[in-house]
Image (tube, rainbow, N blue to C red):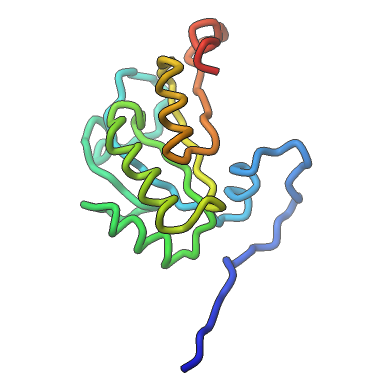
Length: 157
């Protein structure tokens, strides 16, 4: 019996990551992160939103372009692409908070603590939630500020 291990495919980058880049940014530049679209629901109606009519305001989950009914399917997609982490996005993942927390826990349990997870949100939320996401295994939160003032996000950050 033989066991074969393979590393993620690392593309040649036109510009190398900068030292100040966040780990999630580096992995995305390398193309090694799964895109976990947790829900199409969002409480904003931004004119610039790139979501198509097939995803906007529809509560479906996608791993990359694959529609998933369960986190087992998400994990299968992550394995198929040899993901080193995942970016959790949507609509807004906080609109499906419990599902998002479940996904974070499942991905960390399956791939280990080195599997880097970041989440995008535009919702300023309670600091207790930040602790809850950290305990689940989330590595980074990226806030999409809807205006220049970050004051309402300060307590969470």
